[in-house]
Length: 87
Image (cartoon, rainbow, N blue to C red; front, side, top):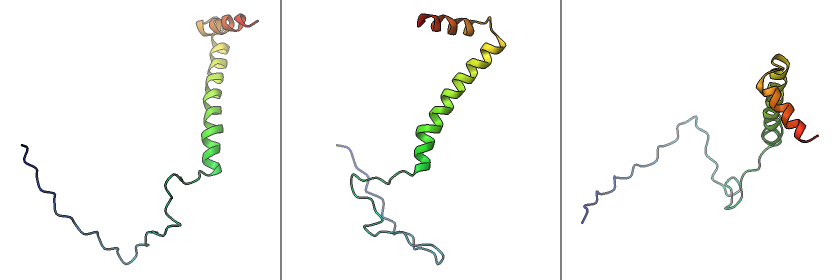
């Protein structure tokens, strides 16, 4: 049988200092099970519009720069070949 160590003695919670703001523990401030805090419009806009457009813009812009500077390169030929498949 394995010997179990006794649990460490519990330490009382630290007392708040004079300048500390109290933590809200009212039921209205605490989320209910299954509910989450709603995300603001700024977070939604950044996550669903700005970030994807930035990624797509970087891919498109990189392709434009490569095609402009190296028109006979492998990337430009590959893009022209793939575009030719759909025409």
